[in-house]
Image 1: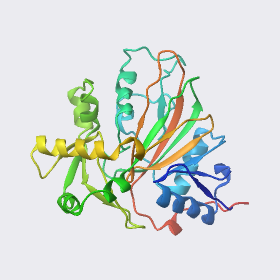
Image 2 (image 1 turned 30 degrees about the horizontal axis):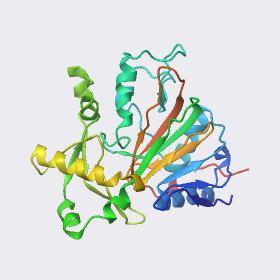
Image 3 (image 1 turned 180 degrees about the vertical axis):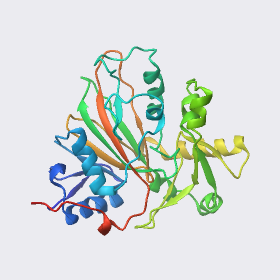
Length: 298
């Protein structure tokens, strides 16, 4: 199956030629998608028709193991059932829009901060795959920043300074910045994880800066100085000219590399408009992709 890519931003992000991802089963097609991800870091697939199981199956064919029970999904029942699929919506189990003071809504407000999925776990998240099911009548974009480009723009002295540093990532930290509170039991579950400040793609060897709102502190530095540096790096990486804003259409599946990008949701009136997306995130494990089981196209 032949796939081509149309760039959506000078630095990164591309839209693929028409493809039904339910039929993306042969090794050549899957490898072409992986190569597109390595180059562009964000890929947009239009006009998909994916059940929950279709989305799970494709994610496993493309990148192996899936993250389960990350963040609040480890604390509350998933509206979609006991599956490794994130419910990125403002809808409760009764199908109604969540009240303004609902704890799930308050927790999800932090999705408007620049973040990376799964950085607060070890192993971290690699590819996130977000599928648009129901959209509001107003724009509710998701924005992306290329952290490979952010690394490339650093001067050599700064690159040398960052080399070897490690960062503690905590989803509790990013939520608490907005006033969200956790019980002692929840704090124990959400301890966080430590990762290198600079990530290196194992296939392309390209470097990226691995920070975002979950980045709590630089382990080798005093807390205050480390946080100031993290905030500076985020600010530099998210200048307007460096951002790709994805305007959603129903049926879009957007895949991004969490080791190479940050992302955030943009504000819309979630007390008025229904918005429902589903996310699957794979685990950052280095595979020999030839060993991954795939079903050959019939």
